[in-house]
Amino acid sequence: MEDVPATVWTPTTHPGPPLPLVLLGHGGSGHRHSDRVVALAARFTSTGYAAAAIDGPFHGDRVPHPLTPAEYQARVADEGIGAVLDRIAADWVATTAHLTEAGIADGTRVAYVGLSMGTRFGLPTAAALGPSLRCAVLGKFGLASSAAFHPALHAPDRVRHDAANITAPVLFHMQWDDELFPRPDQLELFDTFPSTDKELHAFAGRHSHTPQHAPGLWRSFVERHLAPA
Image 1 (cartoon, one colour):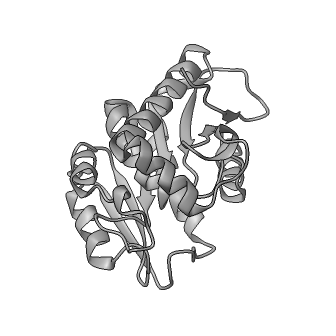
Image 2 (cartoon, rainbow, N blue to C red):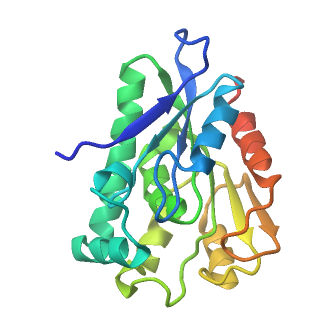
């Protein structure tokens, strides 16, 4: 069984009662210590939550050196996109279970945050977490993608299947001028989520752009759904 490189952040006052847990998925060609992941972890731990990040398949410490998009996409294609999605979902479920068993995390109060590849890998993860998932922040992804991606990564039926099994509240972040994931296919993905508690936040700009205030919206959404009743 492959080792899964992981990092866990907790408030400085921990140990204490198990904490709500926020899972942070990184983007393509990124890793678990990318600037956005570390910044989000700091935001959540500052208000009393635990945060965790793992390296995705063919990323971070799972490979001896960083791979270009073409290289990691080719490796995903060789393994099969379905197998890779199943693997990352199992890794996240195992990580959550381990933190729960260690008394760090409350396994019944879990959120997931990840855009772009973080959503590609986050959809099967969120579906696999089932009722323990209280909410998810997803986006910059859709049922179809541009020719910039390896054709073997296109899996619209799997995307629909996973999205249709996510009943927790969803905040979907969309870049209106995204050149990698066409606007209609992102909107169709948003429609696929069955939750009646879902929000669509659309911003002008291309795929790589994220407004400075957007992470604050993600955090508020997560904290609203993870806060004690």
